[in-house]
Length: 587
Image 1 (spheres, rainbow, N blue to C red):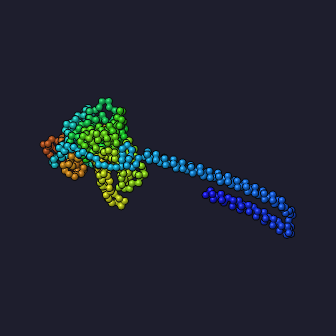
Image 2 (image 1 turned 90 degrees about the horizontal axis):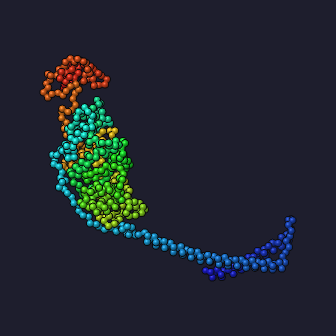
Image 3 (image 1 turned 30 degrees about the vertical axis):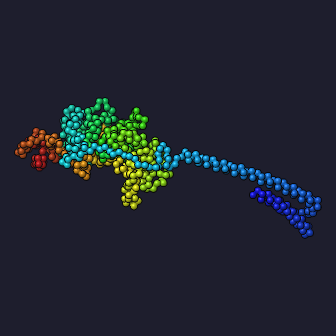
């Protein structure tokens, strides 16, 4: 290439010199032609060039051409040197980029060789069989009543203790309550949970009055029981905004009875439940993901919608372990079920690789949704997760621990070690046309969707027919939640004996049995006198003159009508109008 340029340079110089000569001649001819033609211009006529001047101009042009050629050679030489330097720089940059790429490849492992032992090459694992104790988990007999099942958790002795604590908290001069009356009191609350009214007084009103409630309690008596009802002895110097001292003893008894009456199946579920409460309390929590966002947070361990164990969250722990307070809570709650090879299902609040390894050492397998930023998790690019279509998944494995990222409407991360990662299954999902279709998924995803919601089912059953009335104190709401858990566990045992039955039917039958526990002598009577003797006859009820007139108990209950009568019943001692009111009252 450079030789070609050197060969062309003389030709260019010759052409340049010829062009300069042709530029001079046209000027001379034009000057001669103009001199012959007559001109009217005042411009001075140009004299023709002499031979010496023409030779001097030619020599000057040659010198200029030499200077231009020298400058051209210098410019070409500098351009050649710059091209060589540019080529060297490009080569050096390419070598540096290749070195950086090799370093990045060394730093970034292949898809099959992930950091910290995680790999995309899946292998089967040995999962030991669960050690189930099915002898204690026999269903109750078919003739067992709902009240008998409830008494597994609220026996007669415990109800008598409730009566003693209530009488101790009540003021002097009130009529002492009994276990039978508290049974009916609980039955009325179940009735109010089914047929709810905004205010307690409405159950005794003329417009919304409920005969079943008014036949068991008067309005004032029911309000007294609401005010003085206690489930534990009145705590000494307890904080008015801390409900735990008022229910702690009952919670310990129920935890023992819950675990003794039911043997869990292979699947356990650990989750948070909320006891709704918006008043002032030191341990009140706010969880925006829950249907009831304000209230007491309760850790619940359940199996097949049966509550096995629970702990009320008391606030931040002062001295947690290195793994955290949540880790300590899980280990503490599953301690009675260690070395049985059961499977624990948790949500992303609890699940972590550290917890999975700790439970595996204690003989418990784990399957739960997990957060991608947990310590010890494999690093997956966001682009790879976003590129997944519905029904597609990515899996990684480290020893017996596996991670599955499955895409439904959004990505679901599940960490597990209870099945082999190669096992697949299907889930029924809704498509865009509103039809159910089968979508492929890892087996762990299928198990998590079907076995991790026992605590959620308990919460749904509880809030379908909640018991308890509004109160200003912070502890009654939590006490009624505990009593309702007794009812729900009894309902679970009832379904084991009766098959598929509704919770409403169970609560109605339980309500009737509880109400029948109240003796007739303790039920409210008509105003005006002592209870009627069983041997009263009609002839003993007759009207007689009273010393002082009073309101007729039959027709003066309306607010817009008040009738006074000077006659009373001889036996009932109630003021009555002679005639129709007297007959209606005794009918």
